[in-house]
Length: 215
Image (cartoon, rainbow, N blue to C red; front, side, top):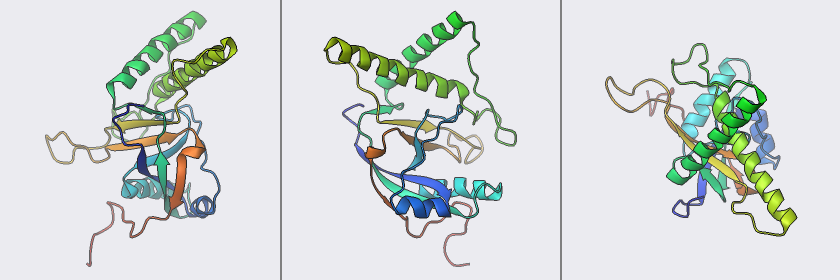
């Protein structure tokens, strides 16, 4: 993690109400391990945006995946963070891609491909198969280096990452011809549960779909 980034952030996790109650009562967050996860495996949070977390949960509710949409807030210590808004970490990711590509070629396998979801904006590529695979490969390479260093009695040059952070441009233009998009957001994937310092229920939560103020 770059030393110039603030370590503590507020993250917001969209979920079902029953899950929210469990989390507030101390149950660990579920570690997502889907092959299309945007930042690889981890517990996912929207950084600083409870409204966006609620919108996502409402979408799940409307599809029948959740009975009642809810949001849980968390105080997160990013720790050793693979922050993909920082140049040095993007260089690290680029190296991981080249290593991953070489391994796939050697094994005679095609590279995974990011894909659009039917009904979403074309080009958003909500199924991030390639990105997920490259990030997983990076984590695996680091863990291998740590094991080798431990076996040889030396200190590893890099430590495993506790969290992953990424900025994503998504959705339609906020206004015609502009460079801002309605669903742009920052996501956090927490790989180490100990980095979640505390949880809370956000107050006065309102999604962008709901009217603001009295009617």
